[in-house]
Image (tube, rainbow, N blue to C red; front, side, top):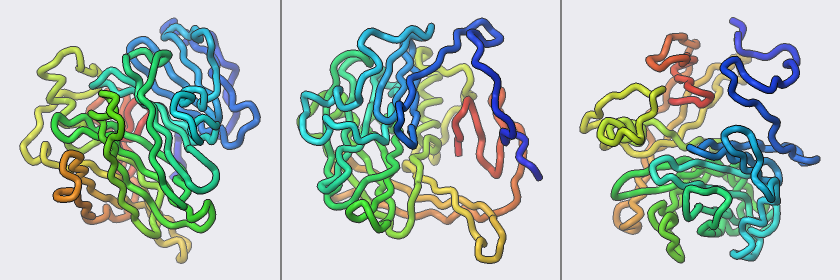
Length: 317
């Protein structure tokens, strides 16, 4: 069965408006960097785009703000060290619950390796940021991916990395959580937790589980948080107790010439406020490989492929 979404020809020229009259506009280019690693997040009043190695901020009408694009490292000038460089792998996230922005990039191409994280002090991505750097020692923390876990008592920014010893041999995946509440408040040294999963990599922080269920529950109580494109479903106690999850889509059977996809999962309970006593990681059963199953999701425009539900350009597992 051929994937009907697979592009087989170049697209047409960019039109100035879409069918609804909303503006379309080109973003900033990577200016010779490969891969460009484009990343983008949208807030109530801003669009933030990042590539290797620039950042740009636009209004919702497509007007770029004065002073942009600019080097990513310039955001970290007050922090100093390797974060002021431009080492790429940029990530931008809009934290809807806090109405803040998270921006990150690598801190070095050589040991000691690090991750640079900036959390905006207000809802204005062109304003000031709380700045942090986290060391990964002799392991290159490649391919970072971030998610937001906005719980009331155990709030975290969760992240995944692929680790390479000295930037060379593959080590495994790092599954991490950073103290979101402390970062938002501008604390000096927010706590972090990282686990290394040897000989496995390319995990993604999962936005489903109790995070999304709790968000939908909050949407019933706080109308300002409601997303009209998400179904409103009240959570069960069991759903609220689910941990954060990291997922890896895997291919099995390649030695037999068969490519069957499954899903590998890890559960992380980042007890930020009591690290030594309560942090732990466990592995639920993998989702076995199987044939793709297509079905209509409950949200408008959503389709499911192999058990994954796609909405507005992101996969919700």
